[in-house]
Image (cartoon, rainbow, N blue to C red; front, side, top):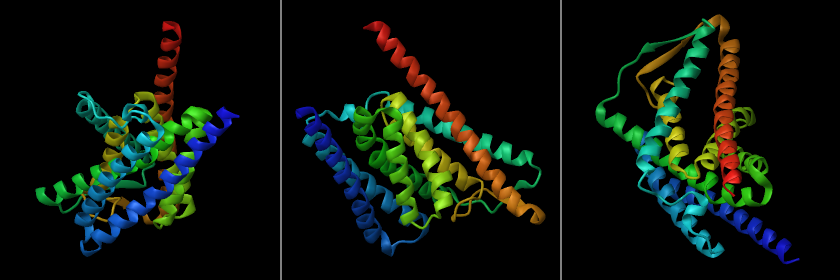
Length: 269
């Protein structure tokens, strides 16, 4: 009975946390309403990441846990791991672009480049937004649910909530399922495998920044995609399936890393 009560208390705490995070995001969006474009995203990201970190501290103390148990404690290796995650994220964008380009119906041309200041605002904004989302989904809630339901049970629950938040933000169910949910599974697996948030934050930010650079975001990037008009529908579908393939490959790599760590730990015992 005591064990069941403890499990129920953990689930309730996670649900309260997940309900509080959209309120934080709504507050950040309201504060940033006077801004526009990349500057608005930067303000939302800064306020959202700061307040979500505060929420994380409150909830781990409520549960009597250290921050490192949910991967939210920065360490001396965090900058290096952030850079590793960033490089991995850019590699995924490059691989996706390569696979899409193989279809022969999409290519990229140079666009009017943003200034260094504009690029700095965009990059910083995406880094802060990624920090907010990784703290909100793949820190406290994922790691607490993992203790109760295992890796894939926790992953499925968080990916569903992640997709729902994006649908509330205007994404279609199709985009939320194949875009946000797949991304959540990757970043969540990276969080579990590395036991921290530096790598998933770096990957998440790099994917969004790379997507901006190749012209797939509202803000103008360095390149612009050119699609053969006769193949717009098939090119879009190709992009989705290439994205799914790239995400699944990366998820498999982190899952494999996680399994190696588990087997090593088991032999050590």
